Image (cartoon, rainbow, N blue to C red; front, side):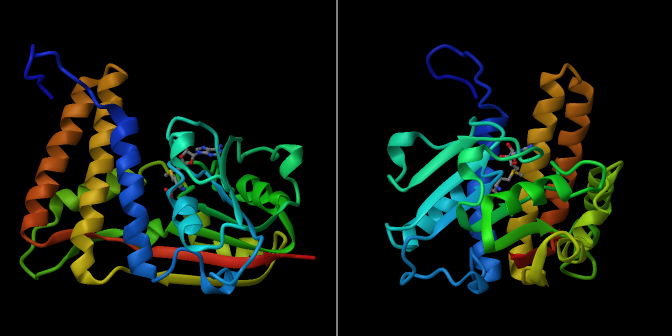
Length: 276
Ligand SMILES: C[S@@+](CC[C@H](N)C(=O)[O-])C[C@H]1O[C@@H](n2cnc3c(N)ncnc32)[C@H](O)[C@@H]1O
């Protein structure tokens, strides 16, 4: 961006764009699913004193949205490995707190067994070696026995380039999806329900759903913004050529989007209760 007063170039950076994308994405999910917290969690405006955690909270958009509609007697903690995207403390209600913690290890002692509900979303970039056990264990350690777990992911195996109209071009969109999957082990997402059942979670249910066609343009725009963030990362690590080729791919995808080429997303929500 050029400044009007002198031409200094500002780079708003990945944090700014990434935070904006996460905040907007939350509302796409909520509109698609019809809930933030699954009704099986039994958290509504008559619930008093619930303690709710969000793991890998990012901007905290999920718990802030919950805090707005649940009783002020409920309390909320957002955990993340970094505080970079946490909201300004003065701007959040008194019953919402944020803590730095690594979900690939143990939670801080003071939080063990303290929560009625634990939520985590979009750990596809965090899970290593196709093994979701470390973050699952982190969440189970936070929960009281019988506490409610909800884990939301895009089911990447079903997220594909898709034609909203028969003549829509999708070559760039297909290349983008293939580039995303390259080298990532994401099979754990499709089998997460079974994994939870065999690792300490009972009454496990899994919802898989695609946004309606009229919503796919907004989802695709969101994923293209993510690619622009990745392009900035390449620039910042000195690989300007890679950044530029990614931006070119995004520009081609944006052209396809105008003609009805989209990325069909699949949302997966796994819920259950910590075994007694
Ligand atoms: C894709 S973002 C999702 C943010 C949020 N859950 C949402 O849906 O808006 C992934 C988040 O996980 C956090 N994260 C990455 N590694 C983590 C770890 N080992 N422990 C805790 N959080 C982690 C990142 O800092 C980031 O905020």
